[in-house]
Length: 256
Image (tube, rainbow, N blue to C red; front, top):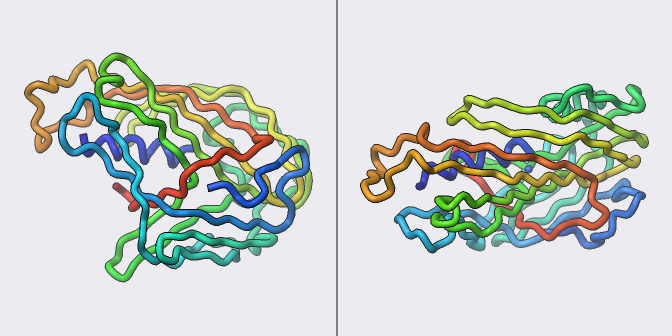
């Protein structure tokens, strides 16, 4: 089941603790962004237990420098994350800065093409050459038995987007067929996003259904486990939330 981490981590790449003021309203978050919170790591089930959660969160206690490629300053010190940013120093035309939308939706329309944008991506590397990504996410509790019985995994993700002028973005949902690591079928819904000048939260929720019907759990050998036996599909909903959800700052090792 350890390789299930590859699947869920990949899903998170498709969607990246609340800030001090969790009220977004219709004004955005302003020109200055301040983020902080305890950092966690995820532990995935390594022994077959049908009643235990597949994923557990553990407090991270280490230190890491962070890069956002936008000019902000932040780090992780003794497991606590702090970050501050004003206007990013390398904005791109909105079509490029928010290219994740054109990758996931059809008929993406911007109310103005004269707006510049950027999305934060927190990355890091340690002295041992390990690469990390810090995401503001939360994967809901789910047991192996629940998945076998047809249950779903709820994955929430919060990203922070900067635009240098107000903009409305409309797009049509579509189906995706991915063949990276494992075939994955996702469906997005239509969106209408109203972004205000400055920083804005972008909230995504994936309801993932994992088909384990081809796996013989009574005779499974973790060393010979074939990841292609797992099928995953689901729906992705994206919005600009009025209230910021309380998620976890979760540290992932790139490629795990």
